Image (cartoon, helix red, strand yellow):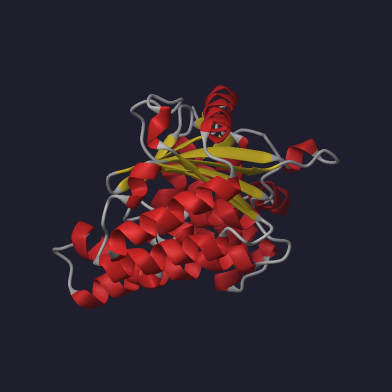
Length: 291
């Protein structure tokens, strides 16, 4: 029996965007891809168009990916997405760049909500902060490999300068400012950058003070909820949760998981200091590093 899988909206979007990127790179026409894959042009269009919620066939996905010129690792990543989405899916550091899930989701999303309990989120890191962080977490890599990782992070931040702008809302645990990454000058520069970014109309930054004590996120770590709301075309709407783990990311797109993390984030921003008070807390944290 042919294996079929039902995928969520976020997973289908990621698969479609991956195939579209492969198709563009190959410079092949859809009719050529259909012929090489042994399927109809309509089937190719359906796999490229993520709003179609029809079930996906693993052999068909494999054939279309190969016809689009996918490398073995790119093909296997797409097949893995099809087969492992019923309860979320993992992404490790070996994922091919063209299929990077977080970059793909951010490219489509209108809004992104981030809870950061120990480090400044990647979208708001300075280059020196990111470099110091990678030097600590990837100490066994050579300097060139670390620089490449930092370059990729800086490139990802371009999403904040697009038009229309992504609406980024970040809640930072006050503990983030006590964890020194690099030296005092790196931390001072990083906090200055946060204060500057908070002035942008589409970026909200709040600090959750220590005085709050126990909070809605409990002992859980860094998470991201991002998506797009399209009332005129609900099939074009998308939401996904990203949980950052050590060297891996877990993506969840079930309605129940998304609703739960949205509620957690709402509670966190309710308990966090307002933007003006948050700026004061960040300024005070900067002074602690430069005494």
